[in-house]
Length: 280
Image (cartoon, rainbow, N blue to C red):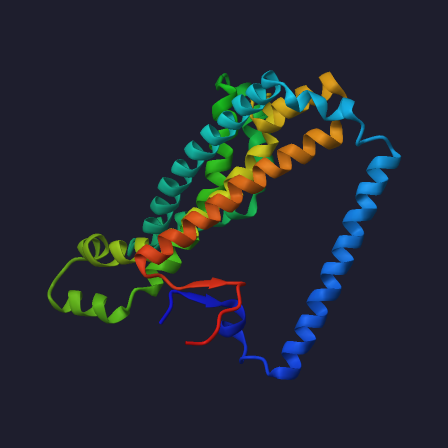
């Protein structure tokens, strides 16, 4: 069976001829409405002068792209480190939650729910405004990286736990019958399989981490958005700059999603996609 399964095939029966005709008509109407909306937006930009060369000509300069790429590398640096912290923290929280030690499990449960519930922006303000009052001085890089990593670790802890729960219980019971301890069963049997199952979800979660870096302006960290704000103030080009930055974020997030699909194919993990596939 193919590793890709469409969302439609996973949730519903295959549509009949009449439903397929309705889907085609609905798709055509939706595309027409989107085209009309896009034309309306472009017309409004033109009427308000947002398509004037002065708002776009500075993109032909290498200094503009160099400054944007410097911010882009700052975004990637923060996203990478926050992703590493989130994976490590999520793994530790998951191991603590499934531990037979009930007090440890309860504490990890509370911490996981806390990080899942708090917005990353609130954690950033905590590290930016509250932590320095206790005499702890941190670089702007860590004031943005730690909150994003902690917020994502709560989500990844549940992702890891879902992978652990997906491992057949028969394997755990067989290992227990052979006298293996809980820790050894987790290390040798459960974790290797669970990690392989959740790898696509882990990579997809990086999309959220990348998007969370857009609030780095709070701590004045020179990421892509912060550098874009500087260029906006210099050239008074709000629409054109945010349009280009949005395209850059779309490219990064699309590449990350494609990486998760590639890893799922290599690991033999089933992927639910929105793409219609013919039954085989």
